[in-house]
Amino acid sequence: MTQPITTRVQSKISSLSNGVVFASNSFRFLDANQNSVEKELSKLNADGVIKRFRKGIYYKPQKSSLFGDVLPNPSAIAQAIAKLNDAHIVPDGSMALNMLGLSDQVPMKYIYLNDKLHKSEFVGNTEIVFKRINAKKLTTSNKRVGLVLSAIDYLGKDAFDDKDLVKDFASKLKVSDVKDLDMASRYYPLWVKTRVSEIINEIH
Image (cartoon, rainbow, N blue to C red):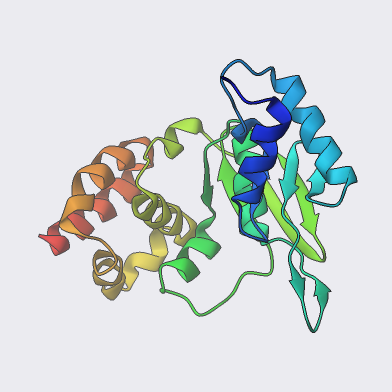
């Protein structure tokens, strides 16, 4: 016997850890209308079980003994917004360099390149920026390859006058990444593809 939608939504919410962010369209159940799911989420928001960041984006509250309510992670918010809008995203080059360990600079903004959105959101005082780019640059599902290509494109051609940079990027990749990197780079400018070939040669 199928459980009522109220029970199913509450059960899924209960299984989430505090601080988890999610899009409403990640709650899909067989034989359940999405509008019904949205209504249940709205009720749980009104009851304080979850909190609404904005329409379609919710998070499970988290408290700190020192600071009280803890704001959700901006990166998690970005991922949920992408899920809600069926957008493919990758951190921009400045974020990618930091995430790859190739830069100590921590970006002040969370900037995401994507194929659908062109907007900004704020989590507290932290800005999340979505920049729309050619969707073909977002074809790879390999997150590490996506970061590398974003970082290379961000640095620009002249940065690779430093020959050690090729070795630095190669050190962040595995042999298993080579095929994905080679295929994904075909949608980038020729100079990027040239650097990618050098990086691949360094990996082998």
